Length: 277
Image 1 (cartoon, rainbow, N blue to C red):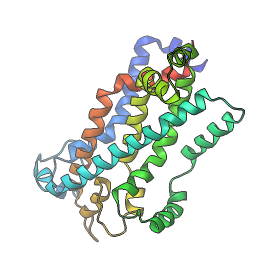
Image 2: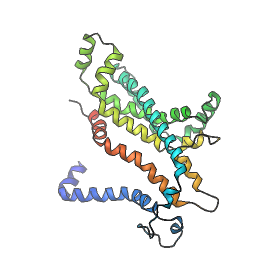
Image 3: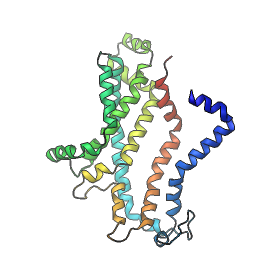
Image 4: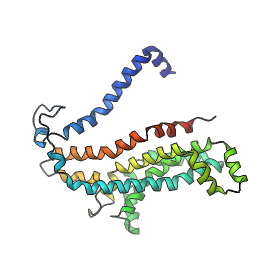
C-alpha cells in the first residue's frame, strides 16, 4: 500500500530519480575504493582528502603481485563452498518440498534461524570440533565452514521454488519409471535452473567475502585467503592504504563479473518461487 502511494505521488520520473540517488549512495564506497587504489599511500595521510586522486599511479598494483596466491585460494574456497552448498541444499530442498510432513514449518523455521544467528557465536564450538577432527589449517575445513551459510540459504531459496512446480511433471517422470533421484536430476534441476544459479552465486559470495572463518580456522598461516592477506599491509604504526585499496579492487572483479553475468538468473531465481500459478 505504501509503495503504491509512493509511486503514484512521485510518478515514473520521480521513481527514476529516487532509484538513481539510492544507487549512487550504494556505489559511492565502491567508487571511493577503486579511485583510491590509484593514489600513493602518502596521499592518504594528507589533510583534506579528495575523492579524485591528486596523483594517479599504478604503483599499488605493481606492489601486490604477491596477492595473486591468496586470490587463487579464495577462488578455490568460494567455488568449492558453492558446489558443496548446492550438492547438499538441492536434495534437502527437494525433500522438504515434495515429501510434505506436519513439521515442515518447524523445519523451515529452524533453517531460517541458522541465517539469523551471528557466525561469531558458533566460531568457538566449530574451532574446537575442527581441531579434534583435523580440519584446522586446511581447505576442506574452510569449505565446510563457509558452506554452513550457503546450505541453509540454498534450502530457503529452492524449497518454495520446487514446491511451485506442478506435480504432474513429477508424476509423468514416475510413470516413465524414474525414481526420486532420477526425477530430481532430469526434471527438478532443469526446471529450477534460475533458482539454483542464484543460490550458487550467493553461496559463492558468502565464501568469497569471508573473514571470520579464515582467521579462526587458520592458526598457523598456511592457508591465506584474500581477505586475510590484507593484514600484511597493516603494521604497528603504519597502514599501507594503497595496497589495501588495490587488493580490495581486485577482490571486487570476480564478484562483479558474476553478478553482471547472472543478473537475469538472480532476479528470476529469487522471485519466481514466491509466485504460484
